[in-house]
Length: 179
Image 1 (tube, helix red, strand yellow):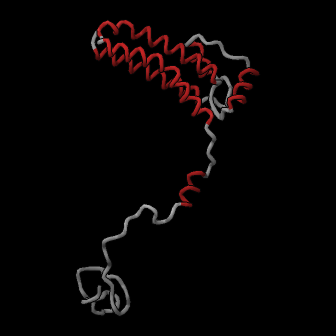
Image 2 (tube, one colour):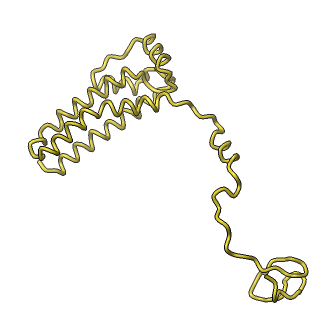
Image 3 (cartoon, rainbow, N blue to C red):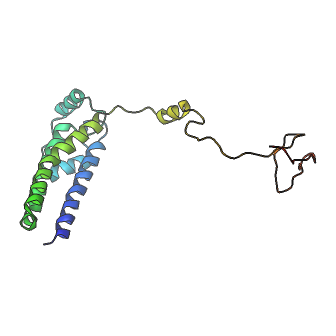
């Protein structure tokens, strides 16, 4: 077993963590128990909450989307235990510092993921036109730097210079000496 095998296993764990959180956040309406979420609950042997308890928890936590936080927490803890078991064969080949770092990361895995989920599940929904309003309130030239170029214009009709010629293409006036 090599470092590459360890990294591949760690990547599998983090990929599964990402899929779990995505599935939990995709639960609509908040607190529902769709088939996709039920599959994750079964994968980690977590019993689904009773429907009234689910809705009460979602309201108590002020969730705007996602599965109940209690269920997500139970799944994350089970995932951390599964990750510890799947990484156990690799620990013998790690240095003491690396082993300590892996152990610390496994302990923090569930709590950090849960705090991230809590933020995402309780964030206020943005209005349909939120981005448009922000853009409309931005100054038209907000981020533009001052221009360093200039346009040569005709002294007679103020038309811009269109080519290499120093005579106006519109009125035939002289463009020489105009700045």
